[in-house]
Image: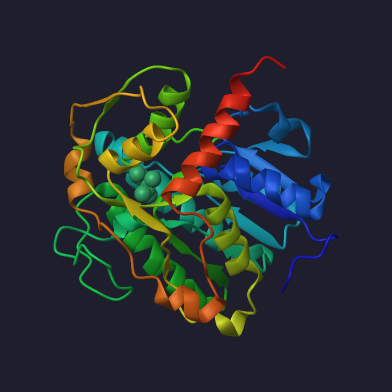
Length: 323
Ligand code: AKB
């Protein structure tokens, strides 16, 4: 089922790092009036609330979720609202509640109210310290040791269960750290790789909360949007994995991203002050084997570290210029 212009799409968590960009992209492709943005609070970015329909929605409020779905009758729902790794570790009960109950509400509402396709993001956080770190395969030892990772792994299994039991067309990707210039992440372990560009362009130094040699899988936002929409547009028979697909693009350390920035801004300086997020990063893969995504629906990233750096710096510099 390829979405046609007359279909409606609902994006829950539209004010978040991915939600904001995905909402803009979907509105460009399908027309703003066909893409309903929803979030627990109105995003600062006026385009999300003003360029098309916007609804205040706490996904923990099941009645309100059903009301929104009854009103707009979306054929597709992107459910992106979640607490990320570092924040969930500080607030474990709420992290679990939001990440799990929110997902159940969406899956149940989709089954009960006839939503045809659901997208739900998983993460490299489903892997843990017992997982092979290099080129982590799709199927391997998982044992996540963060609240976020446990909730994502459980969520993956529930998505697969709803597919098997109810025939619900749920699709999912295990995102690496996402990096973009249009929106800021909040509460993740990979956030440093966004913050560092903002500091560099502002002419400031950056204090990194991970050690300089900590390798993590990362992805530039245009690739994340492409992967998400390619997955959602693929014919159902091509989707062989109904838990969540490994997805890779690049892997780098704080030292390497610093060197990439310094090729454009030689005076940029970084110091290192690892905090509790270091432990989370140490438990995650350093690089990802995404051969299933490449084989099943032709996944292919466009950006490597240096290409991303060039694009990030260009756009962030433009944003700093007076209009
Ligand atoms: C986080 O750091 O928590 C997220 C993720 C990798 O899922 N960016």
